[in-house]
Length: 144
Image (cartoon, rainbow, N blue to C red):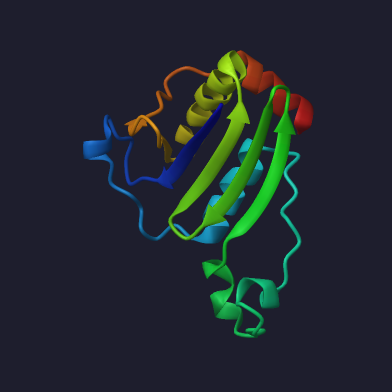
């Protein structure tokens, strides 16, 4: 089973998708920092400017926060592709049942503490962030 989640920086904690107000000042670096906090053992894929710009090397340092960063991480029962992009952190998750639900609950709770909301793309709803998940919390402590 695969599922996609999107995390966005919010101006205040939303009660639903209709009330979500995204913080448009959040950068790729903000989303990359969130990913590193959520997944302590995360290693970003090695890419150079030529890969990101279609073969042309762009030496303008101001453009560095507009490029996406990608990574892949394995957790017990899960395979997660992580992409920090302009405007969102995207998690494409392959896994089953309780492991997938533990990840969703745990990430939503940890992200909410930093001012982010998590959206279940398939169901088009916010993932509840009010309760921590013990399985995810234990994995995060072990990985960190």
